Length: 165
Image 1 (cartoon, rainbow, N blue to C red):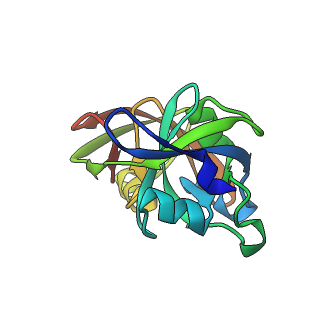
Image 2 (cartoon, rainbow, N blue to C red; image 1 turned 120 degrees about the vertical axis):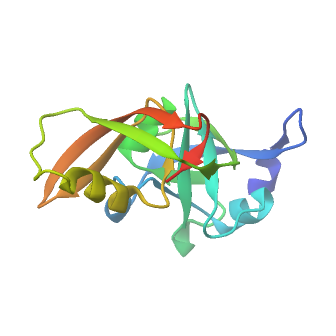
């Protein structure tokens, strides 16, 4: 079933059209999307790879294994933040392909709400929480501290493009 959804771009890159479904609750806010083993194999992905997800907008996410019972269904599980960053809703189709990312030298985050942290702790905390996660300018991201969500937007990066921290 999944193999019929393989497409090749103008540059010969492989991509798949997958249907968007809700993420498992334990993946929310972690910049992870669940795809099945067939999709991983078709796209040439390994466990630590990132994917570029194209809806009305583009976003990056790290891959996570799909539940065995959902193999071969042509779906991608993503949380509300990833859907918002991709400009899609549940049930929409997205284009998914292996992302070419490079290491970020600098990332500027801006809180979307008032936050209070002791001096110097905010930068260390954000860096620790987003280490090895993909980032794109304009995206909204979230982390939880003492059970309360903290919303941030990515304002700028150095270099520009598809990066990970």
